Image 1 (cartoon, rainbow, N blue to C red):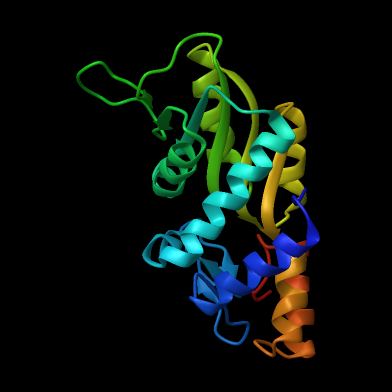
Image 2: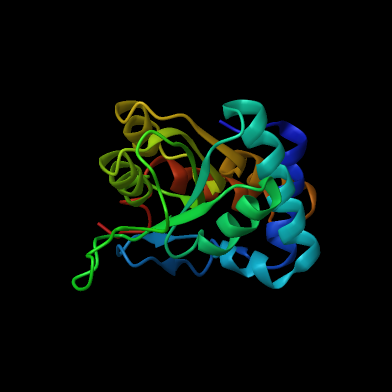
Length: 215
């Protein structure tokens, strides 16, 4: 779910302005998974724009405290959410850790990097939610380390049904600054795309794994 409508619309517009989100239904992108997609999202670009990254960290910080209370620790999911997670932790005045996709193969073989004590309340920061699998992998690592994971916040979600199911099964609340629905409405209103292109983009979101495949 989104924090609120105004934040969702403003965040979507900022992401479009800096090309963190690109919409191209005529010449689709190919994701690492092999899926064809009319949208590509790289929220790490936010870090290169001081005014926008400050807006994001302040919206996160305000709404994290509102929804979950002030956590003991902020955790960022590597690698996309390390930067923004650190900014949020600094702004809130709490410690920061980050979570690797898998444990290191050497040294202490950590998956959670940083100082984390068992029983501490943690809110996880993510940059983007697609299926939610990698994000929830980080949550499981934190839980295995003894953390009390209060919830997760993300900049943007595609809103796939599979992600909603995955978070429900993991018994974890997810809040996002913006989502696919608000992005498309904003993109049409601001003439980033036409209404016809909006229909194509909506069709993709219903069946992203099979969209664009010729039969």
